[in-house]
Amino acid sequence: MLLFREKIPADWLPKVLANLAALLVDHAHLERKAATTALNLEKYRDLYSRVEELNAIAIEELQHFQLVLGLLKRRGIPFSQPYPSSWVSGLMKSVRNGQRHQAIDHLICCALIEGRSCEKFQILATELKAIDPELARFYAGLVESEGNHYATYLLMARAIDEVETNRRMEFYLDLDAKLIREPNPVPMLH
Ligand SMILES: [Fe+2]
Ligand SMILES: [Fe+2]
Image (cartoon, rainbow, N blue to C red; front, side, top):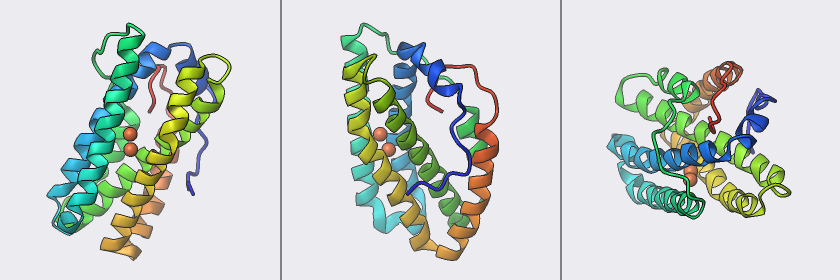
């Protein structure tokens, strides 16, 4: 289902496994931002008819946020400040202006963020099994939902303009491949 052109760098997994507390705080912020992003998409004219679907995604992301906060609390990890992601900001910097173009680009960026999350949650679900079974189950439980968000955002973009979405997807898949190769020593999801 996922179309990525570049593998997740080999140093990502050992980096996050070595600092699960930092990963969880970053993950909490990712879910918080995913909820607000779903609501932000409702500003586009082309998505007015999808407002209830977007609300449903926002509610689901908020529930994920609550789940991560619950994990933080049980593990005595304080909720603290988020790390800035140069991968996310690199994608978002390329969102064009103008209602329709902006909506399509924004949806594609959201789809790629959801897709990369889905991919990374899948890796964590497997790799954490022996180290931290509770966390492994937690990540396994999120894979389907984030995969659905990836597909929903992509389908929403295609419903606005399929040809333009496919054309921009080419651009964004190359951009993702370039950005993901940039070194990042911080133990964060993206
Ligand atoms: Fe989520
Ligand atoms: Fe999501």
